[in-house]
Image 1 (tube, rainbow, N blue to C red):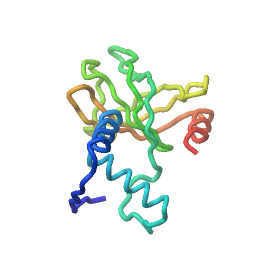
Image 2 (spheres, one colour):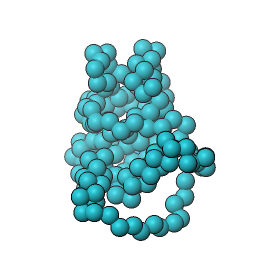
Image 3 (cartoon, rainbow, N blue to C red):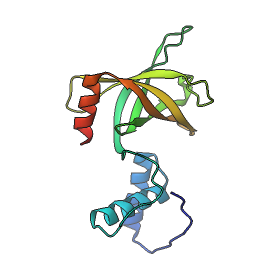
Length: 164
């Protein structure tokens, strides 16, 4: 959705500090955090009739748990570590350390890779084959937005239970 309007408002120092901390923890901009809070408030209170141009089929849930990433590269065949930052029924956002040298691109090569993680309160690992859609490079890490390509039935069921 295109954001073409600026709103300025006054608030207390405590609220601003809390919002900045939330933005830092969720690795989002302050503007994005405030927009999400307002959006959810309006949606819950049914003041928002319909959001137009929402591209995501499923809403994302902000999380933070460790993951293993296997690129199935014939040369190295290494497993890298990362962190799942948000998740939905169709994809997730993972963060990998900048120095990990993980070779994930969105340049049309259609490289698939496997992500393995465990949901809170579960002993069963979730195993999904993914394809990268977006790569964000920050000073601290590389964040990769991915779509699920394939998963086993049990992983799909556990993920659906967790998100519903």
